[in-house]
Length: 117
Image (cartoon, rainbow, N blue to C red):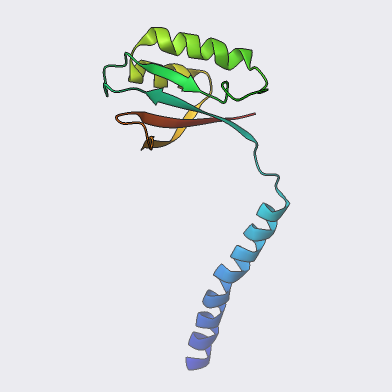
């Protein structure tokens, strides 16, 4: 009886390790998804939305122009609502992955968005 109990405990202890090794091998061969990112920037008035815009690197010298994000920025600026802007971006395939106060800019909040390419 004791021998059967010890054998059962040993088998139970090795099963999770064997499962983890199989899962790791499957993940190691998988290609990581590629994402594009932008930040929905909200100005001083938190929920007012009078100063909502997208930041996607458009101000960087020699940055490639992204017509789709330029159009999304124009649409977001017309919405004048943070929630409406987030809903619009979500409908375009973007997901919010982080929200933070932007350093050095008093009262500005950034919503980090991403979507798979």
